[in-house]
Length: 370
Image (cartoon, rainbow, N blue to C red; front, side, top):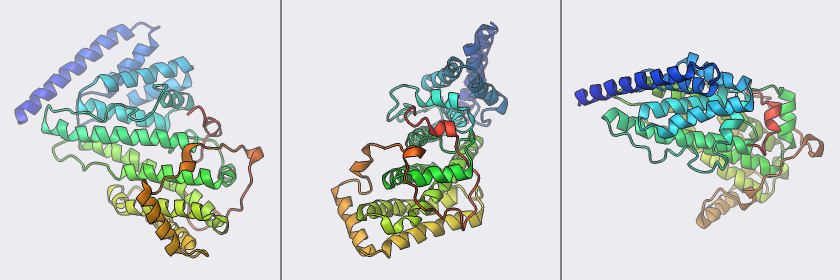
């Protein structure tokens, strides 16, 4: 079996050299900017399982965000073409890492092109749910990573659509006070919808496969680091919204309380797995403070006049009807502008240090575009 693996590696190297050589000849034309991106994608997504995409090639692709919309579209098209035409697990994983880097580090014009490719979006957006690479035991094992990672990124993009900005993006300019005002402007319905989406993203992160034993660890470690950073950002967003609900606890309807308790129960079910997979990515005091807040908000809801037992019984009743924590009212979202908002009192950020993760004002205005 080792001989087959070596032969597969040799074939992969030959393919890399041939495709890069061909692309280099074509892209030598100074007017072929899109072909230059194509070459960078090829160089970043080799068949070698021991090397994640190089920073130099990632920077070339991210630089497309400084140009025109057409330039950004060319870069995203080159990435997606590579993703949808490969049958190699290493190449697919490296291409998905590029997609993740665009979401996290790309400028808005580049992120925007990614969010609308294809224009219809929808489920199975990255079209890798049936991915299988059977060349070797390692490729078979990495195939499960490809399927999970593609689905996770789909969740990340859909969560970003709901939130109105790209979760964990470093392209941000809004200040803390403006961000607090934005959150306090949201209705209970919108806050619950956002919490539901963020918890769903963390639930998908919990499904991450085990690190491969027979190779591919550098790729797995890179992905764990990127997803771990999303975890930190998601917890930041949840922390803000749970504090908002803490301030609104006395004015929540019974239905709102049921929705919130369901979300908190799902969130708590992720705690152990998240602590194992992403150990060392966060500050212990910070994450302990977050889970303490989760328990506090859950307790406050249970102490209200109708009693926690009634909320629990209602949750069971909803579960018997179907999905349990989903609500028909989440089908449409009302986007509230600052001028039209009703501001609720807020005491956020009083007990736990929140990591700095500001959100781009421009991005917040593009909810409908996402």
